[in-house]
Amino acid sequence: MSEAEATAADTPSNFIRDIVKDDLASGRVGSLITRFPPEPNGYLHIGHAKSICLNFGLAKEFGGRCHMRFDDTNPVKEEEEYIEAIKEDVRWLGFDWGEHLYFASDYFEKLYEWAEHLIREGKAYVDDLSAEEMREYRGTLTEPGKNSPHRDRSIDDNLDLFARMRAGEFKEGQRVVRAKIDMASGNINLRDPVLYRILHATHPRTGDAWHIYPNYDFAHGQSDAIEGITHSLCTLEFADHRPLYDWFIENLPVPARPRQYEFSRLNLTHTLLSKRRLMQLVGEGHVTGWDDPRMPTISGMRRRGYPPEALRDFAARVGITKQDNVIEMALLEYCVREILNKAALRRMAVLKPLKVVIENYPEGQSEELDAINNPEDETAGKRKVPFSRELYIERDDFMEDPPKKFFRLAPGREVRLRYAYFLTCNEVIKDAAGEVSELRCSYDPQTRGGNAPDGRKVKATLHWVSAQHCVPAEVRLYDPLFTETEPAIADDLGQALNPDSLVILDNAKLEPALADAGDATVQFERQGYFRLDPDTGAQRLVFNRTVGLRDSWAKIQKQKQKS
RNA sequence: UGGGGCGUCGUAUAAUGGCAUUACGCUCGGUUCUGGUCCGAGAUAUCGGGGUUCGAAUCCCUGCGCCCCAGCCA
Image (cartoon, rainbow, N blue to C red; front, top):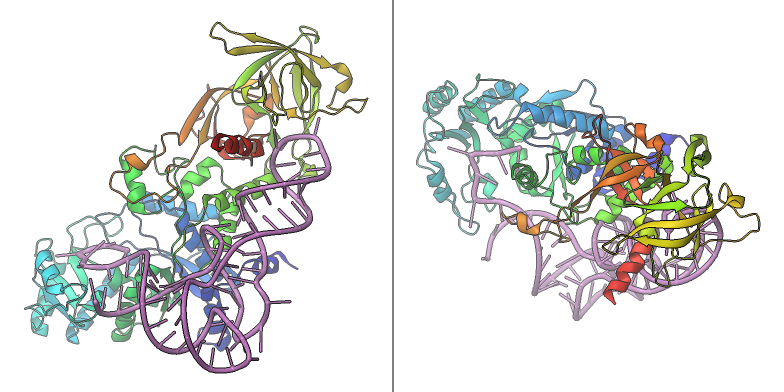
């Protein structure tokens, strides 16, 4: 089986994929053309990744194509910075739109003509109602609206007014263009929706050429039609807009008849996935930026060390349906670990150091020991790790008075130092405050490499670094941004935020090989996966914890706390 | 109370009138120089009530619950 076949076979089907398959089989469409249509008013998050994987994934699977189209119809909110960030994120995720980069603003002239067309057909009109008046005229969810007094303006007047709107003769909010549909419709989107509003704003791409801008409903479907999109996929909240989407397609001389299909948006536990809330986190300074490693943004996850393959795998696993859903963060982390376990190089790093002096190891002596780079991948080879009389081990790996299930170092107990020697703790030294400050130990020279010739076993293997050879680093540990599994959407995010979402360890000790870790995410043995942060400077290494290893000891401790 | 969408293990997801599937999570066990990985076993679900049928998650009726819509945002 080829790789492409394996992927297609492994990816579970879904109702949209089935529709595409049928449409291709029946010949309703010749080839599949989808599109990913972000608004450049913020950074992409994991929810967008689901949509990107769907649209680009389907196109790839069925030999079609997927367009990248920026839905840039609101110059008040949109910025060039976001356009570039979005492109980078989609590329990083592993997708390519080739030549097919488009902007809704490319179609402004055509959309203007089409609005004129509707006016000439008596299907659209210029309205002078204020925003508040329009709201009153719209009615409520249960009561019908009533027609605007300007609804029956003559076609000539409408055409004239529309041209003057374009020319910038009016103030913002003074007039709009509306479709003439049905003010009594149960579907509020059909109660004479607004097509054009006056905005005296500079657009990132069209500059000051326009004083009126089409809104989403008037731009989206027609853009799809212009590009020949066959399947226009969006989230469930747009289902109510579909009758309007179809109304424009039917009442305008568009070159194609795209169809819209809706699926449910992604929700993730312990976080919020709405641009508004993410914008708020950034704006209020709860995080350092859109790419803060705690953010559920694609750029945040990239900085944190998540591989793009993991995000794609995640998207495939959560599926496509119309059911409301909240995916557990544990699934995302599983996907990340699965990729990293196979790919990440292993290294030793001590996060919270405890000094160990090996009393029977000669002073001034050191040696280099062989360590395996990745037990899951023999081709990754081996490296040398320096060993000497003074080491650091993890504070959590020693207990003076260990409980029954604690297998690690304790007074009088023997453990293995990974790839090195068996080590026995002889004496515990404490500082003035009563804290353990140093361990006096002895090693067994017979156990070099990690095995005892007499076959005796130890219950634990510890990671370590040589005090004189190690390099210092800052390590940043991350936990969910929100305390609650499903944080309430409140205006005051401060209350819901996890105060421990970032823990900085500024005294970590790394094995020398980590001095040039590069861009790859590596495994710190027994702890987790870590990646160098861009905050790293000449003087200081900074590592982000991508995700911890599964930790059954931590689980045991947690259970104990509960009981 | 108008319109639209949706109800299957804890969380997702499959089933197209015929053995309730799979994954994550959870529990237990095995292997192991990472309390990782890997391997094995197990527990847990069709929103309620009626009906059709030899047989219903699926079809029909009827309740109930949840989500979205009253921007000149997308």
